[in-house]
Image (cartoon, rainbow, N blue to C red; front, side, top):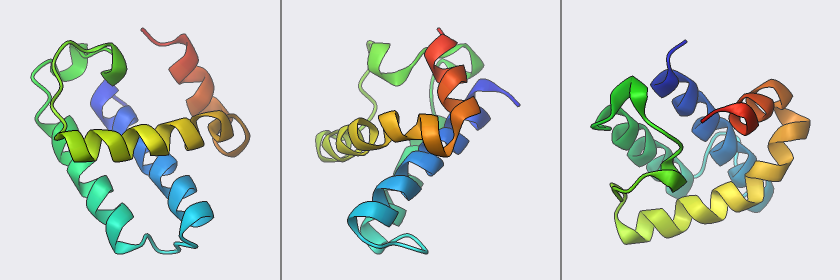
Amino acid sequence: MGRIEWEKTTVQHMIELWCNKKHGGNPLCEDCRSLLEYSLSRLDHCKFGEEKTKCHKCGIHCYRPDMRDKIRQVMRFSGPRMIVHHPLEALRYIFSK
């Protein structure tokens, strides 16, 4: 699995954790589905492709400001919980560049 595909899977899991806890989403609520689609689209169009770094370390802000705020909230909430729900992904993230 390449970097982009792995990040797509990770962001999907993070948004699912957020939605399930905050909105009772199963399936995802409309807001979270919209955020997921937007995030996947941004990853598809990342100019760095498979050579990309973690998004928070990137010098290019490809998210619109409103979506950037939403994904930050999701990641702050879901990040620590990933170690319980998706431990291998969390460890891969911790040790990735």
